[in-house]
Image 1 (spheres, rainbow, N blue to C red):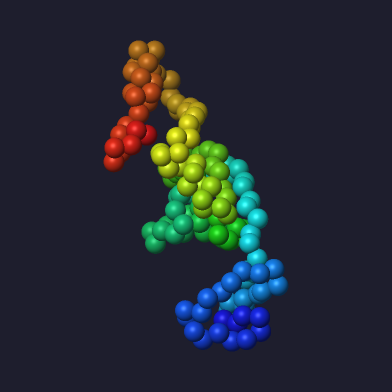
Image 2 (cartoon, rainbow, N blue to C red):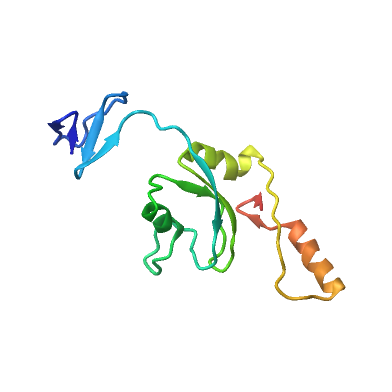
Length: 141
């Protein structure tokens, strides 16, 4: 690693941000200037796992993003491997936290399409259970 042209060997060296400061890591420049937040909407296709890395599958959202140059991005929420849908991506972890953590009370709306036709009574029961939600670690989801 080098900082402003000088090799840095001290792993505890403090790095203060500045518009003209540049770190080279493995020969690639990394700016210390504050990053502008970027937010994108992404239509996750079926077959992609919502994980940064998974040793059991190569098709993770984290790997897809890195391959496309979206370094340092994360997302709000999760979709199952077999689900497709819209996701929010951002390089601002604090924003993602505000969107997903229950203490901020951000209301979420989900649109679900059922793949097979159900009887009306059965469908009403399914919808009623979905409206009730589930509780996980004391939080209603």
